[in-house]
Length: 611
Image 1 (tube, rainbow, N blue to C red):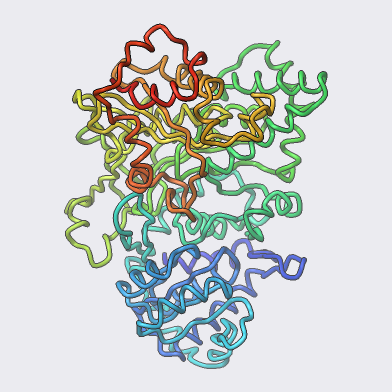
Image 2: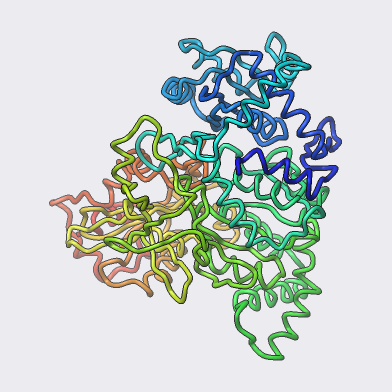
């Protein structure tokens, strides 16, 4: 089966009036299954008319929208290879990828995207740039349709018949936490096998349910998700943007959506903030509901008293959470990074079933997933039946099966490093299998040793630190040093709330050195350190005044830390942790409490505590 066959399958088994939908001038514009196929076919005929041949590369640089899917499937029909790119890349990054992939045609979303892409395309042999939105002087995607109207029908039929299931249908450039992006070659079979296996995890009613899509489609996580919806006859509604998700949830009332932990964390933090502003009585009820939620275990009956209390909490508190998500949510798929177990427990207690999974671009992407009838909070679920998983050196997860990539584009050497001749792919992730459930413990390349030769697993520590409401983001450091430390991006609103707003007019540089502020964060370090061995305990921290994001370069588009970038960017701050001064006497601080130090003494202490 080819990827584009899935929409024909929907037409035969579950045709729907809203196969795809998006907001246009304030109203939801819907495309039926039949309408969508007509558009895709005419686009494909237009691509042929414009000279696109099998194997040619076409790029889309756009947010999620129906047109994205139409162009994707049109490319598949004619044997072209889609190279989707993030709309947030720099001109230099566009130029590098477009040149390497030898892209012939580009579809962009709007004028902002066009500006960066057009600048990159000037030095390249691009046959045409087409826009989804109306832009003066720029060709429209509708022009491609007009080019194909009434033409090339027989040629299209021939092209479709010659497309093989093992042909490459897309090259997805991974964002990467370090180094240059790699072009992952995925075939129709790779993605289709993952779609079919993933659909077995779904609880959606074929032809009846709706999904909201807001993650970038150029990432395989959401792209495969769209084809799962097509396969299961689920209507796909595209959110207007990240800022309108809350409104779109209330409008669409979806039954499912894909998300990343970071978004759920923000939702949870907003919920807690609203709860803290309630009246005394209501706040007490709210806090009791949260306490019950944090104890929830979907695999354990905690007795009649707990169940009664949870039932009350559902009526008074959790029902409002479900209403905010549209009131129809059956399941939420969560991936791309680790989900805090406490969030999973609270959401499950609230009747919001968050199913955490695991995978990579190179595996199309899902390797394992929790499911409604087999869930273990803290794990990434059971391995898919059509895949084999084993643990290699240092417990690296190695996987084999039909969804494993064909290789990296124009990079045979790197392909050989991670993909064996008999098809085993090294994920680079460290894990363990417990009772059939896969647990991710860290990223192999991110493990580091202190100068004492002992390994530190930073992700585990960061996940625990990020549970604290006063901590927005964190990164553990200390490779080759005597001890681990951590950079912390604070949640300043919550810090000010906990310190009664007394620091609202204080300069951040002074605030981060203030003993009361440091004591607040030290208490969170103490909480995490309790579960760590002596060699792994965090000995020091520094507060960072800028939130890390993909736009500022510290995070990948899927919100993973770019550790090398952060280490370089904050080198001077890190030097204050590990650089010592021989003329400084630390002994005078031995009997002094940190909250009793002056700002000047604290600054000296920060520089010398590594001794």
